[in-house]
Image (cartoon, rainbow, N blue to C red):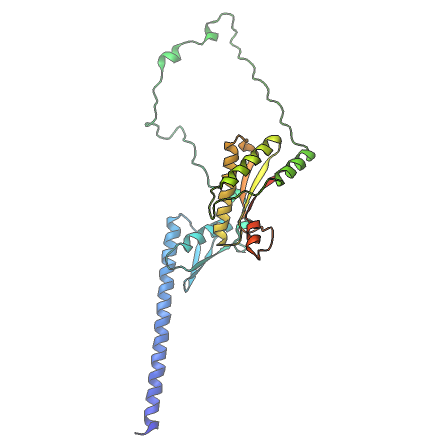
Length: 282
């Protein structure tokens, strides 16, 4: 058999199989990307996240939104879609960072108070007519001129001096670190003891207002760490209110891993970065 007559058809066959395989791989990948994109968009719609762009490459998704908060929230939703390997959040200025968010951006709104126009048939609307018909003692007292007593004036609010704020900050810095059960916002027994200590310090400085800051180490995803730090800061705030501290004096904010005390190189460094700080507000 002449080799020259056999070789060209073999080469053509090999090249044809390679091209066919390439086309099949490309089509298979595009099918996966289209499927993941469709399921990601469905998950975002179910989460009521509108105006979010999802671009899937392979099994990795880029999620773009008009704000860092929406981008991070949407990326977390997409990251939960089966088959998606990673989801990266992009805001209006590039990669979204939880450290750029303010407390107002991510506090969930409370349920609105019911209005008069809402259906109240399930409530007890029974009116005691006899009670309404009974005149007040002032109305039957001939010596009463009907004038109501003047309300007592509240004492003027006193702002803490600079020295008082500095002293309060020094006392709060001396409080040991508050500890939590691993990867949760549940206080350990020692953590609850430290929060009671913090409540005592705050009662010694009743005029100052304090921001409770939650920080985590860099293990895990940024979104997870940000939410964990937020929950821990809020848990400390709620615990302090339960111990008698005026809630109006307190705010809580989570920073996740965005503001470490030290560059983590050892497990001890990671532990230093996991903390709750009390910052006296000016």
